[in-house]
Image (cartoon, rainbow, N blue to C red; front, side, top):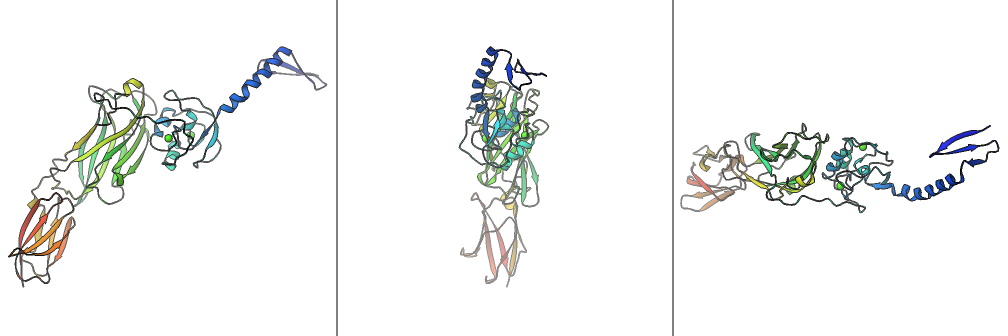
Length: 385
Ligand SMILES: [Ca+2]
Ligand SMILES: [Ca+2]
């Protein structure tokens, strides 16, 4: 009785004695030679992945969105191990078209396919670092004639008597020079913190998910920065012209509805931009890291200083209420008597402040207000016995 089979094109027969007889000694020699070459190749096909470092530059951050976006939907060998920040072996997938980084790194959760869930792993391990990096993240150079990052708006949304939100659209390209070949982008956006409210969710980012289906962002309000990564996963072109990346929201205080200072500027600055797209040469022109824009939120009210604070009752006895709107902190109120002597100093908040007048002699006083920028105004008050 004979059994037969095929192995890489060479046939063999197994006889009743159990002895394998190769059909050809020459083929047998060739087979052994192939095994000899295959062993080191098989070894090289294993790489070490830190879950979330999709570009293997040694860190998990928003720049990994570029590689996940570029390999999105691709499949390869499944990885064993956990989602913790350790080096796990996985079989080689093959280099990405856009870089020398193996696409297996983009499969952060090891599921065998690059999908949205891999972004969750990047987020979980954000800012983790390791020493096995083989890739250096590069940033597009300054090209003065390049397509600019633009800022649309701002839209000012009042959030009560002492807060408002500045909403700025982040745009790429221009009517003449479209940004339609940008598939994936990541960058840091710097902004002023002088008037940021001291509260949670003071900075928000709303991605244009109709254009960029996946993305990550990292808020760093204490540094006046937000890191943004976004991807157009279907790798298709959009129409030429301006691309709307999303909207940045900053909640501010001290400049109130009806009273934002006309000379208040909001500086925005894009730094460390990195992009993937259709044409490398074209993409070098797209980002201009020195692009920045000072925004003037005009139209929100430029009431004179004298109209941004109210004092009452007047005349007063034991206390007086001072209501401040449309002013930038720090603020100082100084009470001076009729002969010019300083009698009280307060550092009021935006809104209503109750000031005690106990111990003051009846008479005429002047209440001086000094704004954060040094501008002053004053009001006369009468203290009754
Ligand atoms: Ca990385
Ligand atoms: Ca995956």
